Length: 138
Image (cartoon, rainbow, N blue to C red; front, side):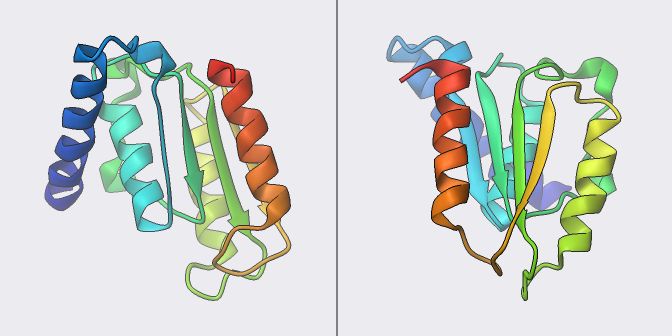
């Protein structure tokens, strides 16, 4: 968790900078792909800033990195998690397991799979765009 927490500190600094620039934290979304998505999930679940949503593509989050749900500021924000069905780097089973755990305490979590490996498809990116528009507008 120490390395993940250090990475999250960078994300928190970016969020605070945007808030200082006048962007309401509820209009800020964080997201990533693979390791970046793990950092995004961790950051969204651990930050004290209320966010607009979180996108996590082709990732997993070890149980040791999960927060105490009762301490979460962003428990009810929208989370979009997706994974390639034929992911050759991080097997789909890892994404499914993370999704199952997250759905136990994140009521607004959705998980989708796409016919691809460890990459993004046009369909997936279109779904991410729609998700962002739903969360914070366009």
